[in-house]
Image (cartoon, rainbow, N blue to C red; front, top):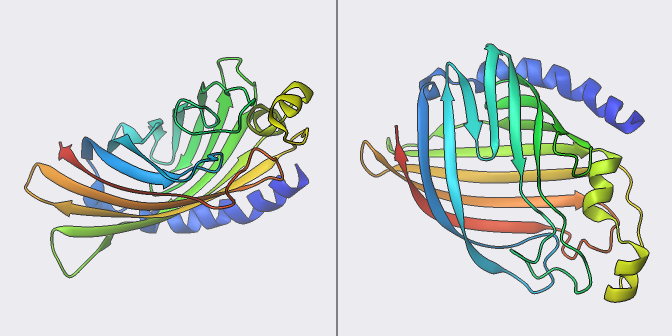
Length: 242
């Protein structure tokens, strides 16, 4: 918790200073929905990179924003109520996790967001009694114009603080799992997750958009469930703009 508070003292001023720049009025009332083909390797995968399909969902307007699985309803221009669907991260439904490790259920979160879609600090609390933990996310991103009118590049960085209860749900290895998998028994503490990526948007027509992404993720945990120090994913798809 002390580490969290030190990080928050830095993060909140940074958020306040950055938000007016990152709000970007040209992307107000902007929305798209689509899907793409992905190829990558998760932090928990034991069998290398795999292909998959991923939905693309985005909205930014007067009522708030939707960015992937995170939705925010604006109470004021800088404060909103947030909801999030946390899909299962440790699961053999999508990855080849170590044999003998039980799947970790996903959950629904509720919380608040301070900031905008491009510069935000979000608190999310499990409300489905899956783990009763919470996560705090600091997300900074910006869309940059290019010499080509139809092409936009949007880099982002994100730092997530995961509480002890959430971390134990995801990263613990029980005695039973240790015996079945051969992994060392592990009791997780608070965890930090670091994310970065580059999103490329290209207007094919007035209504249709091509989307390409390169994304990276690092879980700062000593859990033996972490099979890859740097998770990565590339994707290519399309979306319909509203």
